[in-house]
Image 1 (tube, helix red, strand yellow):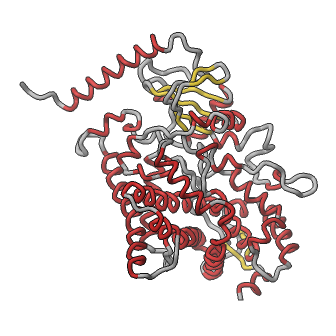
Image 2 (cartoon, rainbow, N blue to C red):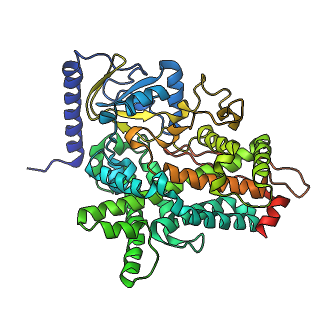
Image 3 (cartoon, rainbow, N blue to C red):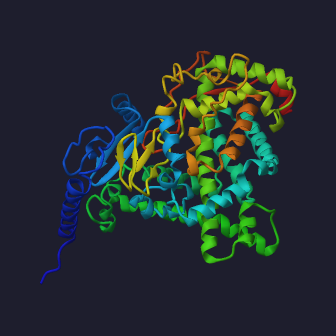
Length: 504
């Protein structure tokens, strides 16, 4: 008898899924409360599959927020998704009910790419808890002072590079932020922009950002497709995943192998990786060490670099903000030295500017997805077990009752009438509940020092042509993944006289 073909096996599998889904929807949930409001199913089987946007998903989600409210329900096959458009709802679910809303949804594509090591994407369990403890041990607020010398040295290097070749500022930012984290995590001094560790990590980050976006690859909708061979028509995702997996292994293993060799020979200075290797020795624990270090570098560079790139764009578009920032820096520093971490509390407008950077164009516009481990009832609506939640950070950053004229870059929205900071710290930019970014304080400190040091040293102006006319600024924010980065744009940095004394 001839063996069944792969095509028929897939058809049989899909047929079984249809039957199971119909049974579950018609019988098991018939006595449950209704689902939250949302777009009407386009198909009795696929549900809202055709409604799900492939690019700029946060913009479509926000359109639905205007139509359906703070929570929006979608169904794709037998999987349910809910978009959370309100900060109050996000806190109610992800913080007050964190015991069942703290996991992450499964992703066939992330698994194929070897992304099981990425701590922020791990399911809520023992491995995640251990890696979370590792993160907190090295990056909680009361231990960050030990990293300030490295941060200061690398940001000063950034200023020097900006002074020499200002047109290459985007590359300088990537290089310098990567150098901060590589030094602290692995005691590795980045010698050039062609550093092999940084290049591998950047390429891996790009692939994982795209691969982890639910609507990009069909295998995330039909996980059974993961079993098709790479030569099968439409299986190009397999090649993409294989390339990402190879990069992930390099990003994880190569820096740790370097640290191990230095430890054997007694060379090198203590770093996060070396201290963890001395503390943990079992095979399982060592996997967690690899994940923690690799995730720390991957997540830390991507987000911090994007925020600083957005800062340059904002300063070019909103010149009045740059003037106010210079005035505050001059008043506190006197124009004859670079800022220090000790100055942070005395610079409320700079702090407000940093908050506005996180709000104005969030780097993770739909955050990182949450996943329910039990069914729930919220506001009279039924939430099935295994529901994926999208925290729509974009909508939260534009709540009309909280942010007037949200598309305008205005740090003053975070200051009261006395010039003091209000209580809106834009914490939603770093996640929610038990899944809030454990490196948020370190990232905030690094970005703050970069932003205030650049402002203390330079004016950021539009680039001019040969006749002295300002060139238009063309900036595009990426929309093809869960991350949104500004693309290259024209800008020219002019050294301000007060910074000349410091630089020399």
